[in-house]
Amino acid sequence: MSADRNAAVQRGSAPVGTAAVGIDELLERVRAGYDRIGPPEAAAAAEAGALLVDIRYAALRDRDGLIPGALVVERNELEWRLDPQGSHRAAEAVGHDLRIVVICNEGYASSLAVASLRQLGLHRTTDLIGGFQAWRAAGLPVASV
Image 1 (spheres, rainbow, N blue to C red):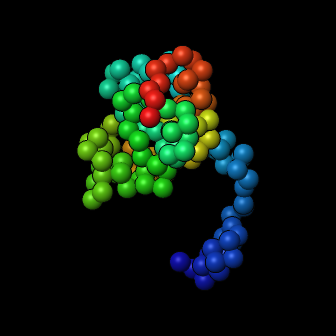
Image 2: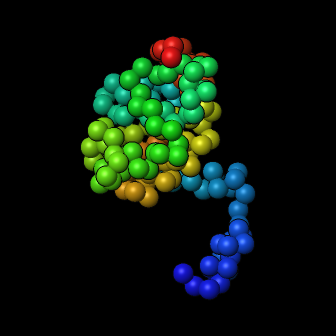
């Protein structure tokens, strides 16, 4: 790492030669790189073999319930559990061609998670527009914890 970049990282600012962006712009940039899906498409994808991955934290799952069949992986473990080459991968992480639908509470954190998973080569990863709340509002199945 260059001295300028290292200093910028330590200060918490953007490295020299790059412009800092706000979260809204970052989300827009990330989402421009893939097609997001709504609740009916996510349910259909799951029926066709896609892996639904719930990244909500435990208190939200306890409060609102779970999507039946979804793999629960909290956000801070996501890359380690879904990297097909990783030593800590989940049994469901069978390859880079796996279709993955990431679900957070309202569809924001999941978009950033998709960007990270795509950097690992999981090129068929997308997220659920509106997150778990949209799934539930669409009347799709939810199980109590």
